[in-house]
Length: 308
Image: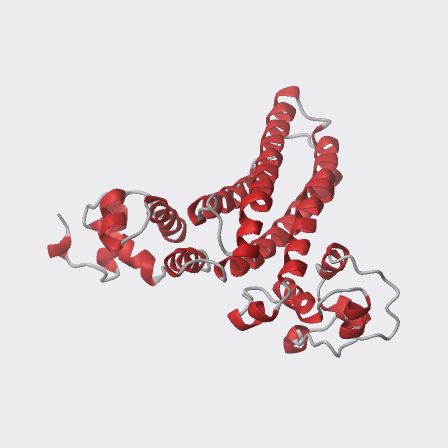
């Protein structure tokens, strides 16, 4: 396995067989790009061109998987093949629903077999609801989002709806992981439990990278104001430090402003304000207005005269 900075040096001239050693998520990328094995000593560029795939687009996808926190630059996306990217995203949808979640479901059934009927029903229902929600979200992307990416226009696409669906999809998967890791009923099969937890963490990491690629691709097509909303939401979820926009909204909250008042004052949608407030709560661990006000005071975001 390649370590250090060399892991991220992906070029068209490198050997395709050697690329697989960079990260254990890349075989999935190869599969969804439709690459046929038996590369021999051929380079990435040679293999891609022989199989009708744009090499730069393929490497862009690989970088998203190999390098944690990597977001494709505007220039890289402008040079990428949009048809190849959309084909990869569609095949990823198929993989998640027909392979990834099917494997989780099979393991889940073995895991809960020794449990009582009530626990079995609860876990089955939660998993079924998540799979149904994921399926609906993927359908929405393929019907509304991907055509928008192709043409740059769509009367039926709204960036707020897209972000809300992404947020819900991630939250449900995180909840499913927490249920198994923190609150698993007694008596579950231990070997099957290990398999399900491993699969969920692997699937979760893959879906996060999938979302990074979709968001970056979509941002290229958005109008300036829509792009600002999307980028600020991505910034808000990037770490535990409050972004400039989050601090701005926190100050408004501490001053006693309601969501509608904040949205009007900052020229944002109410959904965007709510999303930022959720991120503020997650990052600070503080849920009440009173607590957030104290946080803002202690961090010198406001002074006592600003508090009603």
